[in-house]
Length: 255
Image: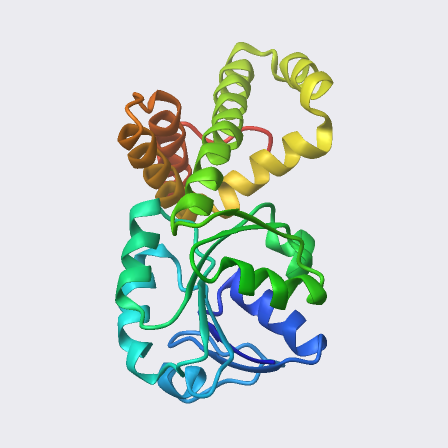
């Protein structure tokens, strides 16, 4: 299988490397990054030329421009899958600009922990084909809907909960530190969540703050679209923006 990978950030480079290890023919493109061990194309158009599958991991901000730019170079039998975390509306726009089947793919979990074996939700006209191609490579893919945006929406609703927990923990521990009760409050939180999950929530909030701000803004927009006031999503986005900018209250626990 010939796979084009657009975007070689943390997720893109890890997935591309695992695809190479799995025996796929990979051509990758990122204007800013060229990781070693991954076959790099000289352009995005060269990367997608002749590809059976195109995986977009550009970040949501560049996903639509990337799709528009390569659309004319896609083979008629190719599949285009967008793995970025974004609002359902963006997934629908991507499906509209592409002349081939499109799969909205939502990665559930942390790519560095799973690599290519990360659980995924898929929807859209190309979802079943994506599942057929990537399940044998070790990716557990669940097809969750026929419309692009169905998978993205489910991930964002999960994100409201997970990033909401992270924001609550950050706030509680910061206040506890000032009150001189950090150890006690942390112990109480870990008795509920467990130390590994708490550490992951706190460290991940700092490491991926910029990306998660965009994710929670997308979640807030989707929750609003559903007719619900996005109180938790907005609060989580504000905490993440504070971590991203390193202003205001310092993150607790060495995060």
